[in-house]
Length: 508
Ligand code: ADP
Image 1 (tube, helix red, strand yellow):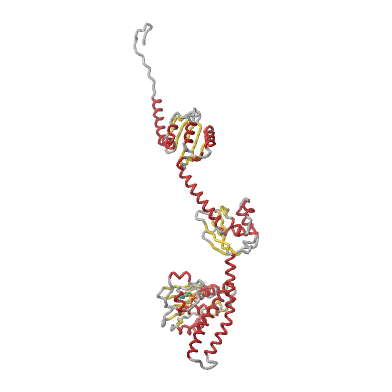
Image 2: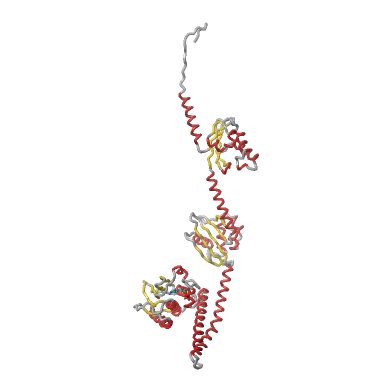
């Protein structure tokens, strides 16, 4: 301080407390370094629209235009530079339009939007205007989300294309049984007009009511039929069934529950195969009928000649007649089996049901098959038991089952072994087992034993004879009696075939 004449008087000091300012500056530094470290992109544009603050991620993604990504640069110049450098993938081919849209959005920021960047990167931008006129842009990387969306879309495209390409009809339902997806083939096979359904409020409901009205779900009150049908649609296991539609087509319907909820339906039209199969069955049935009559008279004539009715035969002629007779018998068995199969398939098999004592059934079976067993030098043994149970059934058909099981057991046994016939009572049921010590059935063949025309080893079967039809006929007959048939077999040890019938049984 000086006086009026300029003389030095002394010093005077003023101090002010700037702790708060220093702290604020430090806080700002902390904040800036936190922003710098963010994995998300951050940019702050001042009220004059120049870059005030940005972080590492912002610089990284704008590396190719780093000169235009520094504080002080105008927003518009930054965007223009990045656009010219091709950093906005979704702007390709419509750069000017894109630029206008981007500027418009920046002028009126309204929150979130997605942006495709270079190298397949996708970001979700959040642009907000601050009260002082500055604009803050924060973005997060959504590349992974976008990639999984693209993958899901790709898979949806594959499913949709497969559905369009497949010959079968296909329908996907959600958990509430509403339509999710379907193909044209579905409507084509069902003979429904898709346009009538698709525009409606609930295509699924409209569809079911149309089906119910056409009589596909049976007869009765339409509402209850639809409700019942909907109940059957909810199932936890795959279901496969065949049926004829009211338009005459035969379809196989496969319903699969989707593990994450909903159901898939596949409808295959097999009308043509069905017709061919019917023609085949009719053909076999006609031919077999036509063959049986002459065959019976051939065998009758052979029998008479072989029996010496017309005089003594030369030994050679006798041998030849025996061969003719054996082969004729085989042919007749085949013809009878084929006719049985046809009758079973068409439901035309006659059953004469009556009460039958088990003892009587078994002793008749013994008598009928003893001679056959002797030819193979096999002992047929009826295991004594005091079963006096009765069953309800067709005796001739049950004897046919026994004859099949016994002849198989004998055929596949070695000479001088036993084949046992053993009855056993199990609760309300009686089980009849035919036990052999023969070659057994190879494991890989077990699943098909009861199917038509199947034989475990065709080379061997050629030696022992057989059609591969016997067991399928047995199964159909036993099941018609409400019973079941099964077997246990160990290769090299032997086989046990058995069937069980209800002792109080009545036929279905
Ligand atoms: P087939 O007329 O050929 O005997 P089946 O339907 O009666 O026809 O039997 C089917 C096949 O099951 C036979 O060809 C044979 O391979 C096998 N099989 C049936 N019973 C026995 C058995 N007791 N021991 C071994 N294999 C058997």
